[in-house]
Image 1 (cartoon, rainbow, N blue to C red):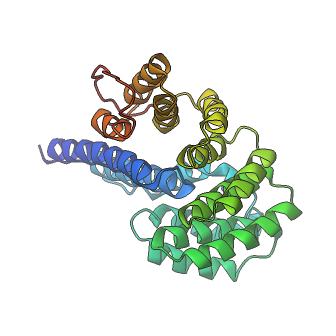
Image 2: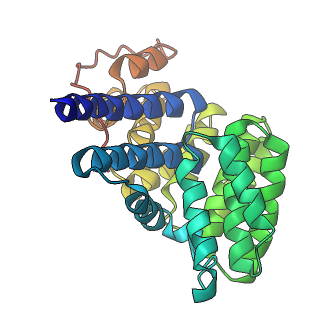
Length: 291
């Protein structure tokens, strides 16, 4: 009976995590690796708890495997040599605790930085230091870590990692109101990885907020083409078409957004800013975005 109750509670926690993630994206106006990382690792912790409850054993090895798989592009070849497996294990454990203890994770990453020996080591660890500092609110330290990580990533031509770094830097600069620097970072991120949906989507959000709907729409369409179940891209397109007084297109992307997890009331409230267009959109049952 206790196991059954515990599993029900864990199911409720998973639903709450997804809801909080949706709220975070709406508040921040964009998607960061930090937000995605926090959701994924929170789910990993929850899954580990289920394993522990059902089997009576710990779930750390499962969590490490989840981390390795989900963040393969960021982790790369860091501490990959056979005689450095212990450091690789410490790295995945630090990533694992990030979602629940950012300050503790930061201390672990900083200790690992002292053990770095290769460009792959440095680019990976510094990227996570940037992510963690962003989450804590140490913005200047996050920028410095990302810039240093980018230098090492260039040395080993880790293009996807560079794209992630630059996209996250772009969002930091956008939040600081430094739009020129932000767009430059987004453009470089796209150049490094033309399949980085978040670089397209976040740059589209920046164009949207500046009223440049003509540039926002194609970038957002590209983002949605790459990741069709990301509701925030569709929500941005909905608002763009509202601003352009195009009812049919607005309704189309409203439905896509809400069907993929966007809160219908929050999107309708955002649309209220564009009262010149008379839109009566149908209520669509809210469902979490599919992974």
